[in-house]
Amino acid sequence: MRLTDITIRHLKMQLKHPFTTSFGSFKDKEFLLLEAKDEKGTIGWGECVAFDTPWYTEETVKTCWHMLEDFLIPLILHKEITHPDEVSELFKSIRKNNMAKATIEGAFWDIYAQQTNQSLAEALGGKKDKIEVGISIGIQDSIEKQLAVVDQAINNGYKRIKVKIKPGWDVELIRILREHFPDVPLMADANSAYTLDDIDVLKQLDEYHLMMIEQPLASDDIIDHAKLQKHIKTPICLDESITSLEDVRKAIELGSCGVINVKIGRVGGLTEAKKIHDYCAANGVPVWCGGMLEAGIGRAHNIALTSLSNFVLPGDTAGSSHYWEEDIITPEVVVQDGYINVPRENGIGFTPNINAIERFTIATKHYH
Ligand code: OSB
Ligand code: MG
Image (cartoon, rainbow, N blue to C red; front, side):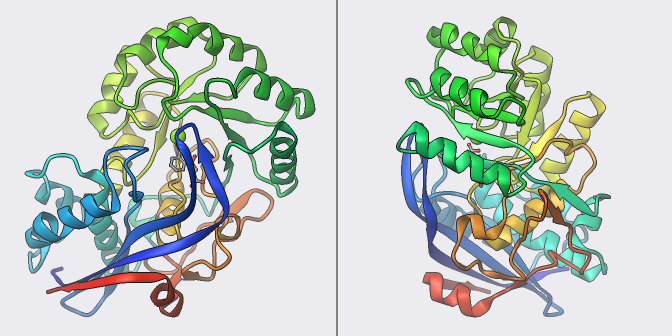
């Protein structure tokens, strides 16, 4: 297979509800969509998960476009490639910039799956025909509002509730949630809002049998997380800190976490995500698929990845209608009784809605 044409579109979509974390709030999502064509005319799609500001990790929409245009696209265009695992090898000379790399790699996996008459899930080795889904709920304006939103998510069937915490919005919030929902599978995500100085607060969370606490400490840390894990019973789940299989190996060896959140973009693509999955399976570490408020293309890739067997915990891949008035794929992603069916059609198994995509597009560029 050879990629002969690539189109990058910059989209801006309004979120149904503003999403608030320990870092701030956003109302819209700006992101890049990549459409790639091979020499036979097969089209594959990739969604870049970087945000327009570097609050989560260092990449942004603009850094990704720069990396794609000036480095990654020139490396891959017209190059003969037989298997998508070769794409990350091809990009090895470029350091980091994982979200940019994953964008093309994802489109290539989609093309490869179609060319070999498989669904993307099958091409990755996924065996599940449906996946369990959780939901990530942003910080709300009041405890009452937070309770109402959690209650609605439970009623909608989500298999696990994740809430965002930050200093001053933590122990009391979790205590009240537990009072109202004693048995719901519950976890908290801090997006790096604490340091080891906060160890006493984090210890208090042990009382509420949370499934895990996600990324309490610095976004590039595994050392302090290992220290923290020795002092708390609740398993730590690493998100921001994990950018590769090597990071996972070191974190597990150090005892920095008991669970890994896998995000395709953060680790540089599906090939690396699959390696992390396999390594964690071999080491008895459960994984789940995180979310980046993706539109339909990114969501479809997450669903395919989650069909692998060691994705034993519900992911953050809620249904399209949780995020958007209108998604950019047909059918949209639907959650029923807490499950999403893994599509069986070739490729990502959802059809990009070109009309919707064009309406949300604010800039386009072609490469060939
Ligand atoms: O930390 O997992 C996170 C959203 C954007 C960036 C980082 C995170 C999140 C979420 C929501 O928690 C996940 C989703 O619903 O897509
Ligand atoms: Mg997180």
